[in-house]
Length: 512
Image 1 (cartoon, rainbow, N blue to C red):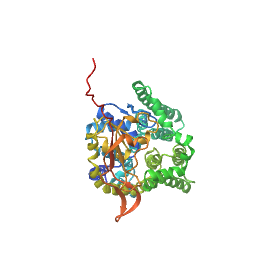
Image 2 (image 1 turned 90 degrees about the vertical axis):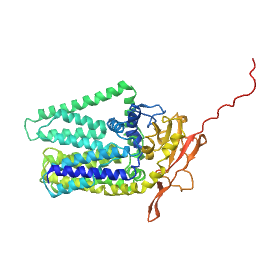
Image 3 (image 1 turned 120 degrees about the vertical axis):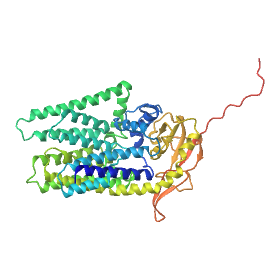
Image 4 (image 1 turned 60 degrees about the vertical axis):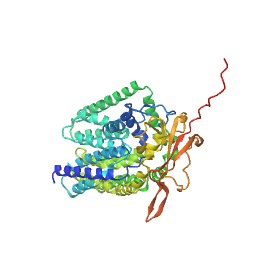
């Protein structure tokens, strides 16, 4: 089948899944929504690329966003400025990022020689493009840019400046994937010329151009941020190396650096299906190493280098980011994607890579199935609680009032309020007296529907008054029986800060 027919079918799949996305309840967010989307919302609502009360920020003052590289929140800000701002804004943006990733993978697969595995892989992408959604995180965007870079680097005519630009762009979307792109592009360059006796100087020249272009672009962005706010780069480094969020998790807290912690936190914070996709990365590496052992006598240097680099990157990821299950799920996609696009990859390795990619897509079936069922079940809960943000706004002075909302229901409240905060980041915050409203939601809460959820620990409950209880409580059930102890859904208890009474006016005459 011709490429344009596959593209047309992908367009049809895009429209169909967009319809399904809008019919179901919006995606439930996580805490990461504050880090990767809040500054974009601020840009669309106020024109300022700022956020407040993020990790390691000890007050409520909005500052230039610098907790991560800026591409994803910047793109979201542009999107939210152009398109309607409502509870589905984040859901649709995440969907578009996932479809961008799926589209790049489709192009990479279409470029392969016709075979049964190629056809099956194309059909899998067409049927399950939402398998590449990463919700509030930038992995989907990073993988898409990574794929564009690999497609560019794999062309017969190597364009070093363009590859350098794409390396920088990938880094600005996802720093870790940006670092991995540099490693893979370096390997691409040397594999292109390894058979030529006079190729080393040319390879070094191409590599230098890629590195210089990427470094200049990243340096310009860093300089702009520094000129706008001299403290911004310090916040970036603090978040990247922090003991709660970045590389410091492993180096400063040994307990959080264990594989057991990765497994248990993944199951608690996400779901067992998520961990199934986490472990697919291990399976990918085992499949590649098994292939190498089977063909150990006939394997070429290209095949050796590709598989060993993939294994080395996986080991490095485990060593440095054992608490970041999202990085492992990204590796599961970029490894077969790289093997499909890298120059001089052998046909037998390409066919095997198609098989690995097909396994990765099918491994997402539990995740896709659980999320679709969950969103269908949550639709009634969403509509029951849909009025709550407007109600809370009516009881507060303005849209600029500071409201504490956990990440799960962020998308529902953000169109109404310009300044939301996540209290899980508030352990060292000194300005909590500025919080005017609280949406205390029941997601992942184990109590029953007859008792209020405990008030957030960093606020004094005596300072707030309840204005509405959660309109609906929801559990995961099977044939009417609860199969999980935790509540789910969108309902929240709404609170507003009690304002001090105005001093009474005296009726006694004033002495002159």
